Length: 149
Image (cartoon, rainbow, N blue to C red; front, top):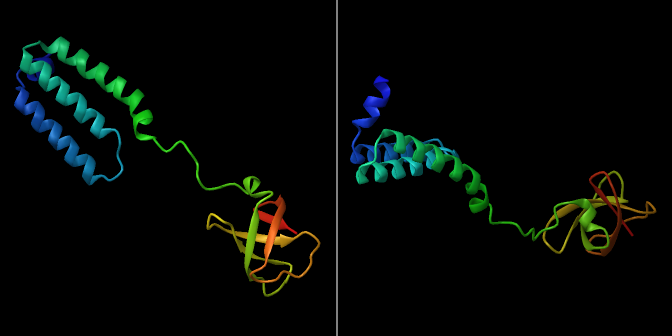
């Protein structure tokens, strides 16, 4: 009960100072996404305290705002929903790639660059010799290697 009395004596200015301290800790910890949510909830508590509401309302506002922020923050922060570069070997099937290097031990293996700039390991479909700077078509995949013809 003493803790609730202590919270009731905290002024709105002290809540704001606490919010700034929490944000500073978040910045120093690099990459922590939870502390800014606590800071935003603390700002709301400072506002509620400034208006003159009691400790019960402050605790309810803090709890509800923190829960709501935890639910909506991933939606607000994750705006990159469109994938612009093929990241999977399956997406490369049917694509044209240009050979940039040949394996020294096996001339049917090498590295090629796709139109998006990504470098891939390639193997010729019939184990034929690959030629540098020649374009090949990816016909299938084998593990992380592209099979070309």
